Amino acid sequence: MAHPNDKYFDVHPLIVPSGKKSTITIKPLFDHVSLEANSEVTVLPAEGMLHETFKPKPTPTPSNLKDGELVFEYGFEKEQEYTVLVRDGQKQHEFHLYALDRELFERKPYKGDLHIHTCRSDGKESPSYVAAAGRRIGYDFMAITDHHRYEPSLEAIKAYEDAPIDLLLYPGEEVHPPENPVHMVNFGGSFSVNALFELPKYREEVQSIATSLVDFPEGADRYAYASCAWCFDKIRAGGGLGLFCHPYWYAGYRYDVPEALTTLLLEWQPFDALELIGGYHRHEVESNMLQVARYHDERAKGKNIPIVGVTDGHGCETGELFGWYYTVAFSPSLELRDLISSIKDLYSVAVEALPGSAPRAHGPFRLAKYAQFLLREVFPLHDELCREEGRLMLAHASGDPNATNMLSQLKGRTARLYDRLWQL
Image (cartoon, rainbow, N blue to C red; front, side, top):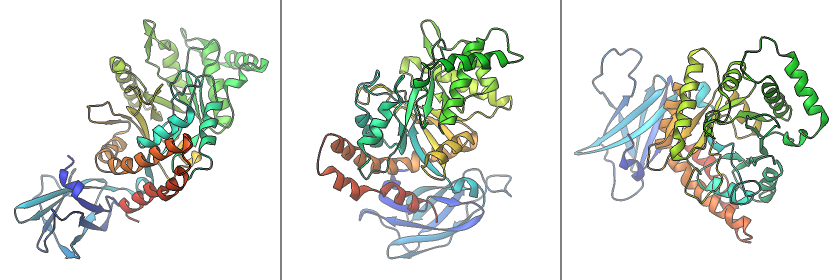
């Protein structure tokens, strides 16, 4: 649906509140395109208007031209995508906008990865490198989550503590409790859960939880479930978000988590969010397909399941996984508390963006539909700004003395872009 003319014009705002009139400005950016005073503007709502039964006959919208910029006002009646056609003689330009109800309009879309590895466990690059590479591909937030290790995430944060960057880095780790096959992620927690497994009280407390479970279904491992519940409780105690990781990862001729245990975890839901889209290679995409199908089955039963997408990447320059999967969180801000509460409140989608394929957003229909618009119309502009910051972050991490000053000149660019694209 994207049109090449989008590259030749500046259109603002692109995101407007529904149920009210908004003023839209279209400005030519190059001298090979122009707009005339008699240009005809037509606005076409993708879903139709509230009062329509059949496909409407397009009605031109009044506009005026000032200093080469075309300005028009339109009442965006309901939440949906709108196509704006500008006809100038024999030429026609096409643009896309989105109207949102107030509660979603007041949230911005932030891209992030909540599960990724470095050379401190089984990845290939250092924490500082992975963080910079994440910004380079458009991440607004992320956490290093090495196996068994919390410290690498702090190392990434420390590497940029004096650098003026817009990427928000949070603590994290992949949690591997003993005698439990389930992988979990501690995103944003203030302490390491892995470090607690050596304490005698871990097994005592897990056993106490296991003993207290009533109406426990046959076939599931009581101790393993109790261990999961204990871990997720500890992650929340540290202010973090607990992720149930890759339930349908096929390894060793079976799913990594026994089906009876997966079913119980989805039923009782001790976790905070499900890795709906995980970091699977091309030959493993069936695992993501099964996770998505299972998610929709659970939703059909009335379950509300917060979701994320993650790379689970083990190398940023390998050509595999990195950037293929990520989360878009619709949040009031990038602060950890806002991100976590937004995900828990079902304001997130998991994105699958395999090279050579159109990106696909998975999650609640309303958000997935909006996210597809953002993937076409907004994130390419956002990611272009992030790319240069990520490159300079790499220079900073490698000791370039000029990088800090150059980063300071870029700080705030993505926020200013959003201010321009969202009607204030």
